View 1 (cartoon, helix red, strand yellow):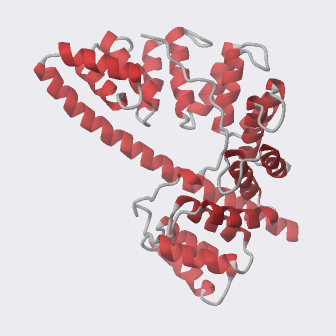
View 2 (cartoon, one colour; view 1 turned 180 degrees about the vertical axis):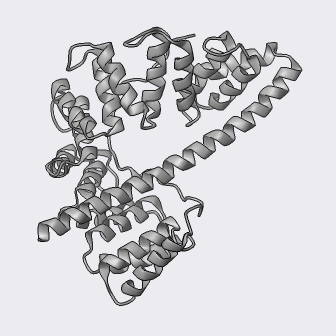
View 3 (cartoon, helix red, strand yellow; view 1 turned 45 degrees about the horizontal axis):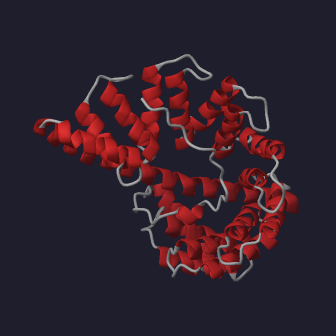
Length: 363
């Protein structure tokens, strides 16, 4: 098996919900959810801004009512027009993702900035990300750092990751691996899987810290347990090569498969290698054929191996491999849909945390 581990992955910008795709209306329609929706609607129609935002979120997520982005935007706007910071953030999301409105990054930035200026740490991080990537505004790393710092001052883990990325990549300041590790560690200790992966990679490479493969494997596992595909793939490599853990081919395949089934091309290639060589799994050229097939459009090595198998595999094995490709593609699509749904759930959780924190401040 050709050792292939992800490069030093940095989360350059955690815009997060920019990646959100329209979801199927598979959300719940329980009695409690419908009752909650109706309660928010009654208050929203009387002009309650907080209720208007929550009502819009129900439409956006399809909870207690049929998913309807256009209706969600209408209620987000009503709440935003009353100065609700959460609605400002959500309206920015709608414009950034093109949900219920035409995608417009300039307009998205306008609403995110309103929320950021009201003190929303999540919006401050997104504004920093827009400046970092030049989305909706000219690229300006200094301005990005300003907003990241405002967000990190409130303990926002995503902003801490982005601050670490700025130091790692030398964006807006001189590169500084030690400082990058400091910020990644802050976010990692809050449970941020991207930071945990990055911190593990620093330990693995011995950059900014003393090289320590055991410590690297520890952080890879923390991130992998949360579903981080790069960490899962890298942890699989650690088990395959005995780096920081005891060599265990079966455990290696277990982690590589998790990443592969989430659409990670490197992992799909390596999973194909495992099946082709019978390492950690019984040798199965048809299964290897299917794994390579998943990655051929994004991985040159997979394309080469797939082409080679096409010339040598039996017709029966090829037919089986083609059928397995279709089955695996369905698994990957299902896993990716779940990840998008979890992304929105995490966003809602962060919003509730900020809402509770704002109430405590008022008291």
